[in-house]
Image: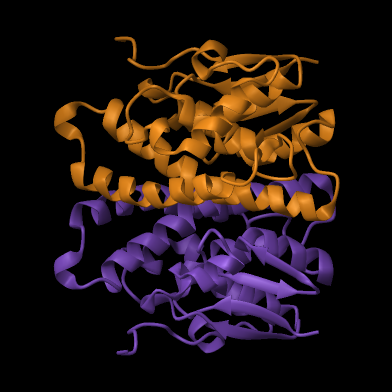
Length: 212
Length: 212
């Protein structure tokens, strides 16, 4: 049965799962969420995900939300990009947690504020604040990758697929790959995995919103 | 063997684990981290946790970081506050993820900016921005609790212990329990669990920092 992924191109959180589905050759189809017209905030979508967040994965009779839950589910279902020991499982989850509270959330928010809001509505102080916190996060990831090719276990796992997701987007958010050489080389390694595709090649873009 | 928890009183993320250890009657002792004097950012602590974050749990020969990883580990080790099916495990993890990227992180940051910085260094626009995002998060949690006593599975789990953690602190961060009646009743239910204690009764406070 073909999996359905509620998504839109600008969502790095959706990209994490779209990339995993693609790299594992899991049959899937995107269900476009018209995010910038408010589709994720309406009652129809809230009935699917009370958190009002993209992505949502419908697969094998289950409806999953939160990208980390989906990545773990797909790793178990496909036997790929997962763990072989409890220690590896914990280490992968540790980086999924860090990604969700220190990296992806703050990149996603900063990129949204800088690119998808009218220029006169951008909260410049909040953007500067987030960029300062992100610099600390890039430093931690860059240092971690200085002595290893992959985040956990010496091979590509869902930890890599989660952490990399927002860093392939071209829109400016204060991150230049050249400033972080170990992150840069790691992003190139992930992009060289067989079947890798850019988010905008996997999912339709929702910005700019179509006029009603 | 007594577990060691690197922690300080103001850390809601540490409190999640301290509360779990206490409620499960797991022998543990706090290891005080002098956070406001920069102890979590120094090389000695970075050698323990490259992420530079509190808490860290040392237990049974393992060193764990990220509160969600510790909570899952303790649930499995003690057989308490955990899951009985894969669906419950996923549902608990879903809320742990949401807590980490939408609730606790943003409450912790907002409370820090409002209470632990000098008044003339508070980024007021960033605070207002975070409070706006938090209002959306409180709404989701309050709605979820309108029709149930516990977040997942009809009983207290680590999802509750994670989500509640920052909401017991008295310092102002823009949250009034009376405004969110279902959250308020749920916090009272958790506080009525046998052995519950407030974070400042479980861990030493690090603020204000002692003069060197």
